[in-house]
Length: 214
Ligand SMILES: Cc1ncc(COP(=O)(O)OP(=O)(O)O)c(N)n1
Ligand SMILES: Cc1ncsc1CCOP(=O)(O)O
Ligand SMILES: [Mg+2]
Image (cartoon, rainbow, N blue to C red; front, side):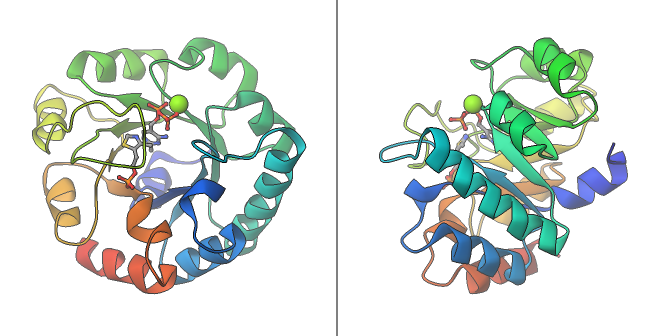
């Protein structure tokens, strides 16, 4: 069971990716991103060309091993069965995924992140026992085909103003130049896909983002 203060620190620079997001080997992209300062990783094997079944599991195992070697928490998106098979540090679920209560029953005290787009969804997730909230899309994004409209950082300030104290990570179109505004709005960290996975050098991109957050 991770302490809340350690989870808040881990959410600082939260990298998300799967093989469809990478122009080179995902293993190398992750290794470079961690060397650049990423503090937590989510394996999100989704979208055109995403791996399935044993291939997805094999890639997940390799990426989990890289995270373990660097002491970085490894989270799996959506796929609770895979999370149990790999004994991951946690999972992330959205409003359309398996309900929080049922996931908690299956995974015990592992980390559960829940997507929230409104104060009401945030409150429900808090009451349901979520460990952190993924809030957004804050800015327009091309990395999630069914993303809702960008909400701006006010969605985070509204949650804080309405007494939501759970750790929050902002997500959606975040990169250099707007990362700081997400923290200033009250998030504990930022989560990104393309700002790191789509960069020429993931280590340089991660380090530049990390610098903006300090
Ligand atoms: C940290 C974080 N926040 C939000 C999401 C989005 O989750 P979800 O709404 O379930 O959409 P998919 O990622 O499953 O397409 C996330 N994955 N991570
Ligand atoms: C998974 C997800 N959930 C809301 S926006 C998004 C995609 C974020 O990707 P990027 O950082 O490239 O905008
Ligand atoms: Mg999901």
